[in-house]
Image (cartoon, rainbow, N blue to C red; front, side, top):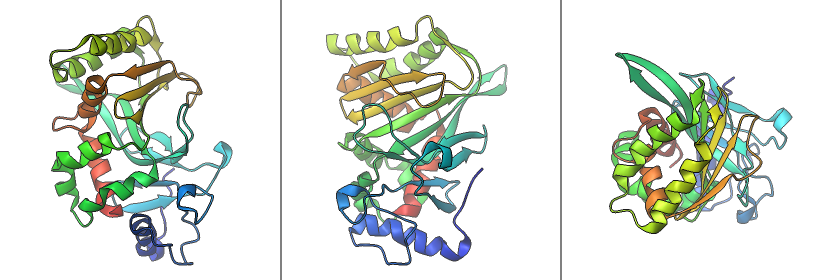
Length: 272
């Protein structure tokens, strides 16, 4: 279920986000919005998400049982608004969602839904884009490059909406990554081999979650789970070329999920 802040509070909600960027404490009226502990105004982490770029949603729930979700409209997949992921130092918050569609015999088939989670502190690094419209942000590769190069943790959560053979999933991903890795080095080849080995022989059922978590630009964690949010790290990918290529697959000028990039741009245009 999508929960939105009532219209009467929408303007104050966005103001709460702007206060994150300016590092000015939010007015007392915004008691439902909290900044990350690193800002020292509250120990409760900020939970945020934007859906369809129109309504701001927030939650201060700290347990999965009471957690709020945001639904990706096309696939009806529900994403937690805030998650604690293996390998991450703090909670990450949902910023945008979309879906991946493949065309078979002119018929579009949805393969998975995806959501990008970020550390809310990353917004401080995007102040240069304050006031930009959604289309400007979506077409500005420099902004997405800044997100990739940020040392703030970020994670792409992929939720399969149909059964997929592991090899087939990897082959499709590799087909997108390989052209983006020019003249791969031995380090790149090793990273791709590690990546490939995780999916070989797997039968990825509908509902399987795959996490691609960037701890830093050149270091990415890979986790796969068929039973909710993964609790373990299955592989560590350390190659600037490979991790950059993977980010470009989703947020470059020819993204495999245009809806995800559009949702993210819409969210940033609203928040900034």
